[in-house]
Length: 90
Image (tube, rainbow, N blue to C red):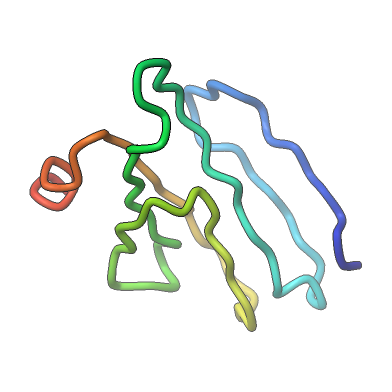
């Protein structure tokens, strides 16, 4: 159950369904973005819509969730090299 990887399609233009079993309520998302000039200064904003009300703004490209109850959720994230740009537009 732990360390089970599921790769989602890259550059998906529509939402992708990920169906988890009832005991799979601990999971993480690796966030990716390309910035060839300054990759160390990327900022991410994300939330699991339907589970969280608040957005997370961070430079850590990983979102970790534990004890998520069954349901339908949408994971949303954006990235920028300017954290002010992210916090003003979500």
